[in-house]
Structure formats: C-alpha cells, structure tokens
Image (cartoon, rainbow over all chains, first blue to last red):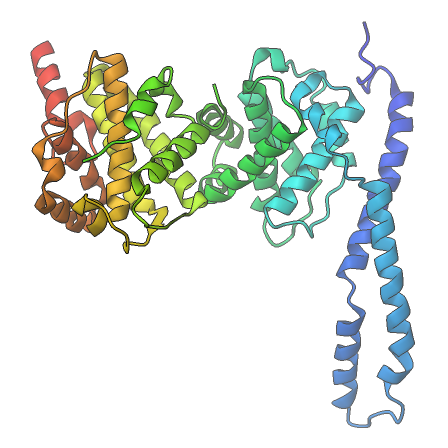
Length: 251
Length: 196
C-alpha cells in the first residue's frame, strides 16, 4: 500500500501541505526580524550621530520620530503576538507524535518535532533564534524509507542521522555558533531515544523527557561539541545516545 | 556509622540495575540525605545539575571499566560504589549547615562527606546483600575520626582516593597506589594470578 507521506509517489498532497508551511515560515522570519528591530536603540544611535555632526540640524530627529517610534513598537508587538497565536499555537498534545517515531504521518511528525525543538530551544536558552518548519519536512522526505519505529526500541543510528540532517537543514539559523543547532537536535534525538525505551507516555512524560534531555546536553556540552567536530558524528552520536538513554529512563 | 537507607535499598528489586537509572539515583540520594539529617536540625541544599553531572561522570566510567567486572564481580561492586563516592566528592552537589546536633561526630565534623559515604555504602552493601548472599559489616575504620580526617585531606588533592577509602570501610584490600584503575585492584590481580 502506497504511503501517503511518500513525497515521490503523491506529489499533490505534499504540495498542498507545503504551501501553508511556506507561509508560516515566512511569517516566522518576519516575526524574527520584528523582534530584532529596536526603534529606541536605532533612534538613540541616530541622535548620537547627529549630535556629533559638524553642522547639527535645527530640528531634533527625536522630536519628529517620537510618534513613529510609538506606532512602530505597537505594530511590532501586535505582529509578534499575532504570529505566535497563528503560526505557533502552544499545544502540548502534538508532542505525543514524538512517541510514534516514523510511524507518525508526515504532518504529525513535522509538527511534533517543530514544537519539541521550539521547547528545547527555550529550555536551553536559545528561544530568540529563528526556527523554520519546512527544513524539518524536507528531512522527513529524505528519510522516508527509514525503518526505525518504536517497536524496534531505540534505533540510535537513525536518531543520530536525523539529528545531523536537521542540523544541516538550516531549520535553526545561527551564524555565531555552528554547534548550537547540533546541540538542540541532539537533545531532540536523546528525547526520542528515551521515549522509545519508556512505557507508553502521556504529554507530561514527553515534556519531562524534553526537560531532562535539555539539561543533559547542556551538562555535556563539551562532549557533544566534540562529536559535531569529529570524524564521524553520526556514529559517535549514536554511541553517545546508546550510552546515555538507558540510564535516563525508569525500568 | 549509620546507614539508614540500607533497608530501603535492599527492599528494591534488582538494586544493581536500578541505581544505574538517573531518576532512581537522585530519588534515593535525596532520601538518604533526609534520613541522615533527620532530627539533627541541619539544613541542606542540593545542586541538581551537579548531582546529575556526578551521575553522568560515574556512568562514563562505568561503561569504560565494566569489562573488569568479569574478573571479580563482588570486588567490582565495591569499586563502582567507590567511584560513585569519588564523583560526588569531585562535583560536590551538597551544601549542609553544620550547626546541628547529632551523636555521630563524623556527621557533625564533615556532614557532606558523611552523607555521600553513607549513600554509597548503602548502595554497595545492598547490592552485595542481594547478589552475593550477604553483605559485610562495616569495619572499625568507619567510626575512626582520624581515618575520616585523613581522607578529607587526601580527596582535596585527588577525589579518586574515595575508592580505596570505601574499600577500607567495607573490608576490601585498598589500592592506594592506583585508586582509579580497577585492573590494578588487589582482588582482581589475585583472581588473574590464579587463572594464569
């Protein structure tokens, strides 16, 4: 029976699914830009520059721009909260699809990993970084034939491969720290490994696993950074997940 | 030395494996702390991240050295418990106010060391009791303040001295020369010599 999530066989449903994802990612990018924009700082810089000019203008740019600052701030706050409500509704239930591994359908897989990654980023102190959903969907398509499933317990190699693919996908953009996306997606894979070794989970258990994974990756940041910079990060990460995960779950 | 956690650990199924789980480790560590400080008036603060870091360091070492367990499983239980004690000394997850009252002079003088040691001894003895038909009783050294003062000074230089220290308390022959190397332990070398 053809899998509805196999992009190569059924292109149209993918296309229909991809369009809203594209729009959401564009909105996320816009929201991120709005968050970066600080009208007060920009005007203070402008004011400082003007005061140091050899021939200062008679009219203060601050006086002229005061109303503009207020309106821009209002628009930025409105845009940010609107974007949050529309494109990133906080529904913990979607996280349960993490338990299903590759057996979740494409939309559930992508949505669960997006929300879980968003949660991990906040827990690990990177909540202000941009996270996109379409690269996660691309990784799903790349690994559509992966056999891993919860019935096979934790497939550490597939989970390590997923972390490396997500890191390379550009889902998290971070120009100043290249290992940051790897740490976050390694935490996601560690969470999935823990869930695969645990009895059937509820939402609280999934969130507990995410919290613990975020803490463990932070505690072992040096180890994970070395894995990322090493010769064979997939094998090394798989070995690390295999070493850690059984100790982090209850028998 | 009192080990109030020992009966509770011994009642657990398969304590040897349970203690390798972070959640059980943390829960039983905190339980031991509460039991040790009961009615003393002492207050404590546990740094969870440091406690987890100590556990992870122990796990790392456990995976590197577990093959040695084949040589002498009973001895390896003592080594693993000593290694756990060393990691607790190294990461120092506990802060205890020493302004309490107790009949145990070691607890009053060095509350953190006393709590760490009581936990690791509890783990070692409960595993020995479950898996090896009985646990040894603690030696006189466990009540000797000079022994505790000495180990307190020595672990400042090298926390791995916790391993032969725990051996001393449970009556195993300590290896003070290479404390962190399980393959150099007297019991392991004796078994290897017999097999050769």
